Structures are given as C-alpha cells and as structure tokens.
Length: 119
Image (cartoon, rainbow, N blue to C red; front, side, top):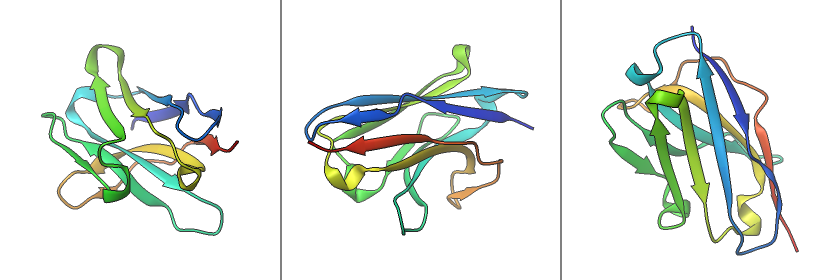
C-alpha cells in the first residue's frame, strides 16, 4: 500500500502562487493515477486535478488555466502548481491514488497541507 505525504502549503496573497508536493512511498508509484483534492471549512472534499499513469490530465472547472498537475515518477512525487490564487482556493489540500476513470480515491488520506489565500 502506498503512503502519501503532502507539503508546500502556506499563506499567500490573492494572485500569488504555490507549488504543492505529494511524496509517495511503499509501492510502485508509476502505476498509479494520482489526484489532488481539497476541503474548505464546512464543505465536502472535492477533486481538484488528476493525472493518470499515462499522463492524461483532468481539472475541476474552477481551477482550469490556473492550476497544473504533474508527476515525476523518478522522484515518486506528484505536484500541483497553483497560480493566480483566489480566496476561494483556501482549503486543506490532499493527494491520493485514484481510479482515473471513476474518479474514486482508494488510498489512505494523509494529513494534507493547508493553503490560505488572504491579503
């Protein structure tokens, strides 16, 4: 089973950028589709972006053109580059392994990393 550790969150002003990292260990990272989720206070966890083992990518509409998901299989790491951040992007961000077609996570949730967008 793969273990996941998220990092890279922080406090940023509106319009700023952050890059989140998701380090995986314990299994063969390259065979997994990976995804980033976020959960804002009082809201359900939502899928933000996903990348398949073959490099196919999908995004939720609200982040298209601003966020970029990528992966480096040699480093067992998935990334989420977030640009033009808005207050509504404030949330705890999590990564997970995912069934890409069903958009269903099936790994254990980590601690997540807090992203706060505020002036």
